[in-house]
Length: 326
Ligand code: XMP
Image (cartoon, rainbow, N blue to C red; front, side, top):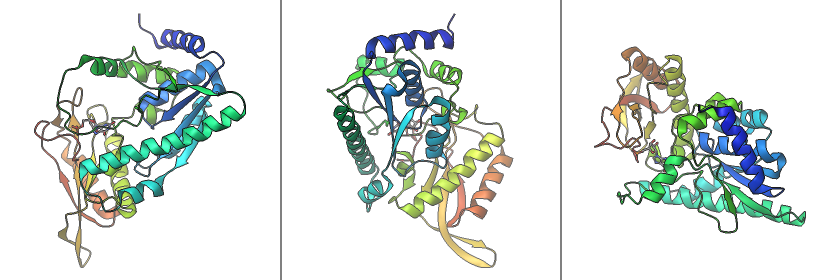
């Protein structure tokens, strides 16, 4: 019978055999896969592992704290956080095109990560103990997909924060290669990781950057972060997390509409709710959320998030709509 305790024991032994007394590096994204992969490696080799977390400023509310505090507390992992918020904002200034944004975010992410990596490598080399291993949270479906050569067209240039380009100077450590997502979550729970990370719904690598239709600015990110936090809190409070695959919250920054609030006219931006049900994100249906939940979300966003005067619901399935708006 499959049981997380046995998988952990097997993987810990395998990692120890592969790595020996070598030093290991791992990028954390805030998502499940990299978090569980790093926790397994830490279980196996302790402080031979160093993790890097890039805060690109496109994270949701609380995500950095979940990694820096909750994750570190529950695992004991040695963590280096790179605050790259300014860097990403400058690189994205004036850019509205979705593919352009994705390319910029992907490029800046790799550069930022490589810089942090180079610093750690230099430090380790000075100690006479070079870093030779890189952890990746590759899952079984990723292995099948990349080996399958199915030839499907790439609709969006997906960028995965966990999936950095294969760096030839490193030997890869991939403790999740034989596992499915549900199994990875079970292992994460067994290892005592925070539920916000282990149970997290899919969230794209480019983060909130592709949920602002229009240019990405600091103010817009703040506004979207608030709206997104309200939606997540209300869906969780209503017990709907298991029913929903994910619910992107999108700011239409280039659209304004007239509203009225108190005794004044407003001219604000709409927020779009995109709740979807899906098995694998390849196809999806829009989730029929209860009206009272929608009403609560709408009231809270328009009352609490200044600059937003309208909340709209996306009722498009995939296809023809994709899950994300960009
Ligand atoms: P779409 O919008 O293509 O999204 O229907 C399908 C799934 O993929 C997620 N997504 C991404 N994940 N990097 C990621 O790691 C990306 O660049 C990216 N773009 C979309 C999306 O949230 C959905 O789960």
